[in-house]
Every structure is written in structure tokens, then in C-alpha cells.
Image (cartoon, rainbow, N blue to C red; front, side, top):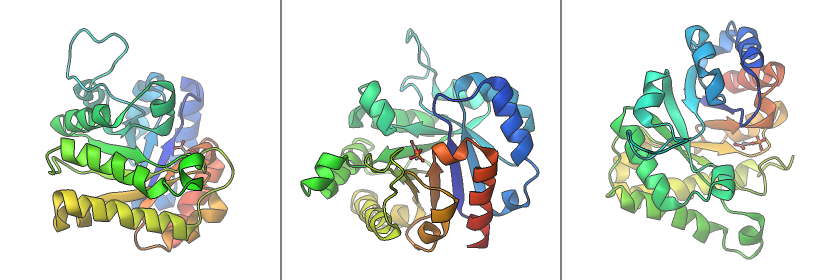
Length: 248
Ligand code: PEP
């Protein structure tokens, strides 16, 4: 089943989040794709009762299960709040919260420990791409984390290829570029964790996707789904993306 995930970032009040879910909840395509929404934490409790055919996720997670960590929310707390997923090391967390690869590995382990699925975000920036260092950056982000996890998957893992130059820029990667990155991701997972893990891992593309670009990405066999930012905020464009995805 293809995966369509909505990252709302720091947008939407509780009322707006509920209205979005009301607009999307009856969509026929919901049974044919795995739909995951990453709302702000403030909206989780309001969405939970209505999110029957949509999974809920958090945009970040603490690496400890409990303790004196002001401002953090743990994986067991997210599970308690109805989350099945969490983003890990989104590029905005890397940029604004100094999140690094070792911290990402701890967060992934914490999520697996609580039975949640991490969506580990990787991607090179414009300068790395321009200087031909894009692949090296991806390998570093993947190998550091997979090695720290002892080369074993402790649960389901989704990896989102989100090149920084594409996020929020209105210029998505081409399906070919995204597919090449997805291939590299599977290859690193195979080398670190074995063939079965490389087969099981889900690879998403994210960065300025829209209804017009869904089909191109979903035609690539290496890509299992999309992580959508801006185009997920309006339920109409999100539903349009879902429709294309389940038709593709
Ligand atoms: C994101 O930030 O995860 C993202 C994919 O954003 P956008 O679709 O707006 O580029």
C-alpha cells in the first residue's frame, strides 16, 4: 500500500486541525493508502477520536522514556496520546534544534522500544549538491544511524529522502533523482542490516510535492510514498494527492 504522510509543521489551531480531518475522513482513497498525519502536539487529543482511518504521528520525540527533560515528549507518551509514528531528524529540527545523527539513532531506538514507527529524514543541502557531496552526505546520515543501531532493525522503519533544496522551494527533485536516492538508501540499509531489512524498509520522498507531481514519483518502484509539507495543509490539495496516488 502506498504511503501518504502530511507534515503540518507549526501550523493549525485545534479547530483548524479538526476541520481538516472532517474534510478528509470520508475520502474513499483512505482504504487504499496508508495515510499518516503529523499535526502539532496540541491537536493530537482532538484528532484522536476521529482519526480512525488515518494514523497519527508526532513531528519529534525525546530519546529518553521519562525523566527531567523539560520540553521533551517521550515515545511512550506519544503512544499514550495515540501516535503510531514520529518524524526523526527532520531538516528543520536539524537546523533549528541542532539535531544530529547520534541523537537521531537514540530517538529511533526509543520509538522502537515503545512500538512506534520512526520516519527518519535524510537529505543533502544545496551546497552539498552543487559540490558533488550529496551522496556522501546521505551515506553519512544513514551509516551513522544504522551503525549506532548495531546494524539491526528493531521495528518498522520508514526513511524519507528530503533534499533541503527542494523543501519549501516549489522545486521538487525529479522522480529520477528521488529514485536514485531511494536506491542508495536501500543499498546502505542492505550493507548495514542485510537484504531482508533493505526489502522491508519503506522509502518516502518529500520536498515541494503537489497533486501535479504525485504520479511521477509513484511510478518509481523504489519510492513507497510521499511526505508532504505545504500541499498537505489544504485538505483539497491533500485529497487530490491521495486520489492520484491510489489511481497510480
Ligand atoms: C517537509 O518539510 O517535510 C516537506 C516535505 O515540505 P514541503 O512539501 O512544503 O516542501
